[in-house]
Every structure is written in structure tokens, then in C-alpha cells.
Length: 426
Image (cartoon, rainbow, N blue to C red; front, side, top):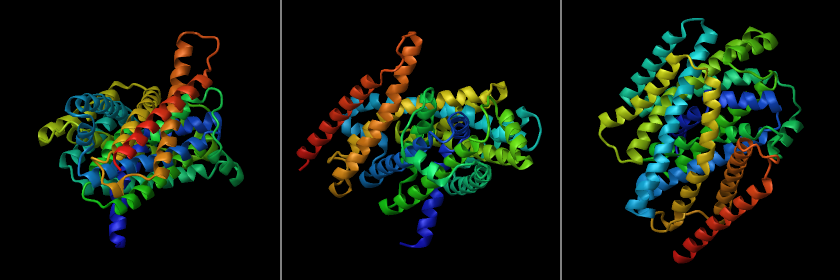
């Protein structure tokens, strides 16, 4: 395998890390660090590993079956049922793209404002214009190369901030491997998972995997996502040196007071790179979903889809709405849809009528997929339980035993489906 092919694959898949390291990642990871120090580091590690595995599953379906995810759903569940599944999942993820775009543009503008004081509305126009220019040309190599540069900028910026955290290596290793959700951390934990395993990235990865081999895809994907996970850890560590925040300008003041001018500039650079890269990848993913899930092929219609997503972010940017609440809400909602998408990926990947035998997952791989499904189910259902309990003002707001039982029953059901598929395909 040539080194040039490996490098090209890493550059291609840098779109994924650039997509999930957006203002939402910064907001959620800094919130996790400032409120709970390094206690939620395990969630970033879990999400990074799960992201690699789920992205690999999504891309493997496309590469080995030569079907888009939309066509694979239709083949598995039939035209009518497959249509409704595509409509629900694809529609939900498209709405997520639009909601993310609001935070993306606002984050890029906030980063620019921290570096160079200026009119936020003019910055919003500039960010939107340059994003539209790149998307209109639609050249994948341009977008991938730019994403690689922006990810590099984020890496350097947040590494500088993370250096000022004060933790022993042994503490970091324990926090990375021992799961624990402190009281009040449920929403942030779900957000950390949702901001790393971004649902629209699963469709984006499927779309850009066309023409690659499975081995090249795995190399580029793994390196790219590991770099993204490492940057997320650095962001969380940077958050441990500041207090709670409600806006990026207040966060910049915190970094400036504790780390000097370097801290504020590093945040500005990192925030702009994260926001601008995601401002491009979110509409880009929406256009791929339109093509791969809903079968929209006409270029003008595809441009209309990413244009609507981009305009949603532009309208939010011009309105002056504060980005923090919007970003956190979107992260949590995307975390809730993850179990459903994970379920469909597992079922399709094990279908003997879609995936060739030598590319279907082994027993061990399926076990890992079920662990990931259980993890996202447990976090998602626990958060739903907390929300319902709070809304109904129930005295006991924790029903972890019930959540565990429901999660276990759902995993048994999925396991039974996989066993049935294995026995019928022999």
C-alpha cells in the first residue's frame, strides 16, 4: 500500500474530524471540564472509539455493497417501510444539520470577533459567503484539504490551552477508563457523545467512501477520528482552568485573565477554525444525505438543500441569538437519535443479502457493536428519564434500574435478530 494513498485517505477523512469538532464540541467539552473537571474524560474516549467503529460500519456498507445507505435501507426493509425509515431518519438528521449550522456560523463569528474586533453582522456575511463559494464549486479535494488545515489550526490552538491544566498522568488514565456520571452531568455526558458521534457524519462518511478500498478507508478514518478525539480531550482539559461560562467572550476573558493574551488568541483561532470548518461540512453533509438517502441527483436541487441549511445558520447569525443554549440543545437531541441509527447500521451490516460474507462482522465485532449500542441507549434513555421526571416534578428523579432493564431488553432483542440472521444465512 503506497504512502501517498494513505496520506490522501487521511486528508479525505479529515472532513469527519473537522465536522464533529465544531463550536458544539468546544461548548460541551469546556462545560464538561469547567463543571466536572476530568470526571467525564471517559465519555470522550468512549465516543471516539465508538465513532471510529460506527463510521467504519457505515462506510463498509457502501464500499462492499455498492449501495448508498438509503438504498441499503430499502433493500433491507422493502420499498414502503424503507421509505418511511429513510424519511424519519434522513429528515431528522437534515434538521440536525440546519440546527448545527446555526451554532457553526455563530461560533466562527465569535472566534473572528475574539481575534479582531469588528461588526458581527459583517463577519456573518463573510463567513456565509466563503462557505457558499466553496460549496458551490463542490470540489471534494478543495474541501478536504481546507479541513486538514483547519483541523491542524484547532489542534495547535487547543493544545496550547490544555498545557495549562494541572493533572497527573495517572489521574488522566483513571478518568479516561472508569465511567462515572456525577450528579447533574447527564446532559453534558450525552452532549459529549452526541458531539463526537454526529449522526450526519455517518451519512457523510458513507458518501465520501465511494471509490476507496476497505483497508484505505480504515486507515484514513481511524487516524482522522483519533486526532479529532485528542483535540476534544485538549478542549476539555482547557475547560478545567476556567469557571462556568455563558458566552464565548466571557470564556475568552477567563483565558486572558489566567493565561494572558495567548489564551484569548488561542481560543479565538480554535473557535474560528472549528466554526468555519463545520459551517462548510454541515451543509455538505446535508447535500450528501439528499443524494444518498432521498435519491436527489439534480445538481440544482442538491444546491438548494445545502443552501437552505446555510441560510438557516445565516439567519441565526444575523439575529444575534446567543449560541450557547442552541448548541447544547442540538448536541443532546443528536445524542438521542444515535441509538436508532446505530441499530439500523448493525442490522444492515449483518444482512447476507446486502453485505458479502467475507465483509460481514465477526462475533467479536458484533459484540463490540452491541456494547456501543448499549452505551448510547443507556445514556440516551437515562437523559429522557431525567427530563420526564423533572417535567412531572417526581420526587425520585432517578430510575436507573428501570433504564438498565429497558436497555438490557432492547439489546437482547437486537442480539436475537443478529442470531436469526446468522442462522438463516448459513
